[in-house]
Length: 215
Image (cartoon, rainbow, N blue to C red; front, side, top):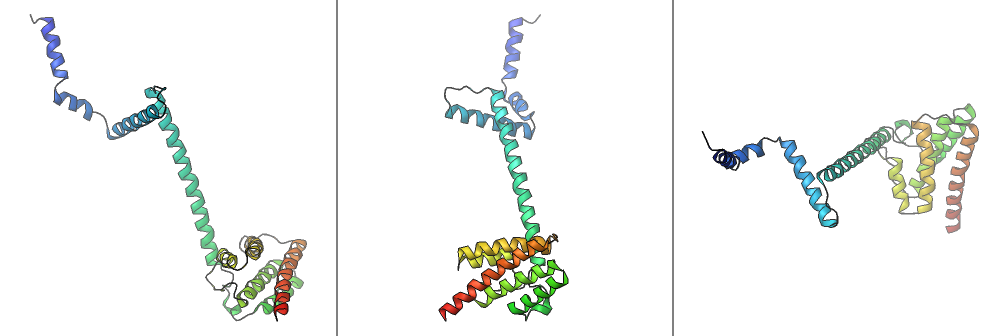
């Protein structure tokens, strides 16, 4: 009969053999190894930062889970805004303000005349478009911006900032309304259009008065 102590020693010897330890280590999957290493890393980090705290395994696991949730949420939010901005920019590039070829030789005066014609006809959406283009082409004549068929209103706003920050802010407000009406097909009320028209008229009048003063 084998002595009980000898049997225990034999078992202990087997358990401490390298091949058995390797088996135990390799028995974990890659994800388990990765998860355990992450938990260990956070546990050590918190132990260094807060030496008075002795983080248990569950504490480290909880921290890892919370951080992973936060990271995933940040990635989703960043992805949402990236896709939204990409779609918006693609749409604006597809429908740039100067996209109609038959208007390529028009000046701002022609667009103002067309806006008045559309206003009388009750087509306030197109009237809004032509008023905005009149302002844009006037800025082009003044060399505040360089009007191109492929440019977006955002790019024009950035060009204006180099000349006049206040003028750029006014332009961007008008451009937002233009985008909503022309591309977003938002309905235009007459009072809103008249306010839009007066704002653009004031900007043009101010610039023309400055030209006269300089002349």
